[in-house]
Length: 200
Image (cartoon, rainbow, N blue to C red):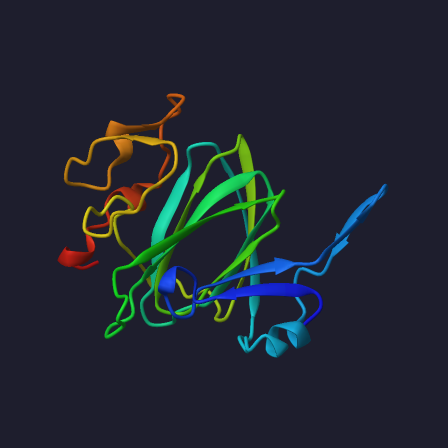
């Protein structure tokens, strides 16, 4: 397991892992392995990935909180440009940490990867001018299989960095900004998700 360091069950939530690759740098730049099946299995991580995805977003974009209803995906996420605050919420029925969240800053500088297993809602907030976000998933995309919960659900209580505003009973971000006045930008779908207690 020489190429990665794994912090397991972070935040006391079983299945959430932070993975840090070994970065080999010199005056030319750096090299690292972003995924190695053998190293992952030596660390006790046996997920099998079937698809890679990539997105670009600008400062103040908040994507989430999303999950898949019938075809849940595990996700190995990282940032290759910029910085985001990445969040997972335990949605597993019967889990002792149901409704609990954990967030981690992912950036091109820290090169951390966040593994979020099946059964979690996921989202992120862009903190840099631009962020490019990459992730591997354990199942294919299935249209019309997406569920979600409100990013500002007070019963979950996610502490998003830099966000200023007041909860007014919905996921609509119009009453919020970042600390420098940047408005939050969300999809129309994400503005309509309900709180966990009301269902999805």
